[in-house]
Image (spheres, rainbow, N blue to C red):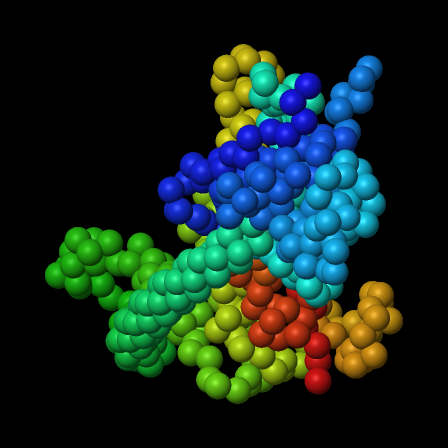
Length: 469
């Protein structure tokens, strides 16, 4: 049986193109294994022929079972041992098991699917001078025909790992820089859009204010004119043919009844347009460097007015507002949180209704109405810190709670896990969603909490907790 394999370098298949998700099997790995009973001289000869070999894997072939991985000897350990007085003379002609009993050192073994970033962190935790030793990589590689006693292990040069690590760090820095530039550009676009919308809302409010201010006088004038006409009818009961003809032509009786309703309709439309323009201005609120007090409930009402177009079905919005004082916050960013969660609830309810329509149409069965109509419940309240568990000694005594709950289909455990993973910093940087952005605004910008509670068939609830200082 051949006791020493021929060293072989498995070149990287990526061509040097690494990414943040690259693993150890994407790097160049050495395949060099020897049986424990081989000659030390044969081993030294292989190291002399291949000066770049970082070490050798020690294998016990086992007669009636699969070969066993025993360990690894690095080139550094071998050289240091033979540099000792008479080390070469005493062990050169000995069996490897004798030498291995003297130079056995701890070995770091990692799966081939381990990412390069993780592997580097673990490699650097080794004590000196072992942190420069090669790493043993375990994979699913099959043994060569000529060496059936080989095990699925290969060696990774620590220098190769460090080079790959810094290459990936450079890529990560570049990606982070590009993402920052995109975010800055997007922020500038949103700021420009906000200024544009704010300007449009301001331009709408000017003529609306003019109409609203004159509409009050118009209603007063119309009431006075009708009183005057009534006085004429009472004091001049004798009809004149020309006047009676004109009254018939213009349908005076209907005009007298409809004119106040017409003015009331104009007043209602003007009031609605004014509220809409004010809501646009509130939503496009520009946050200052420092947070400022804001009425959260009025901003929730503004957002509900803006999102009314999304409710093209009978979705009922129930508002259980408590007595909230002005809350110091970045209201422009909180507006984004409110609208993100509300749209998530609207979409959930609308998707449920669309699926029900599809089932009714294609299954041709009688529609079963739900036990309660689709609805969203918004609840605001002041709560004490002992209402929820916390381990922070600096927790404020009072919190502001804004709960947005729907009675939609709810989320599966897999969907909930996906959302919770997006709240973490690594996932947030890889793929930013509306909910992950909302979590970042609530926690990082306001020191609050964003909780999610959901169950299939029972709806979903998002609760925003803001410290009240």
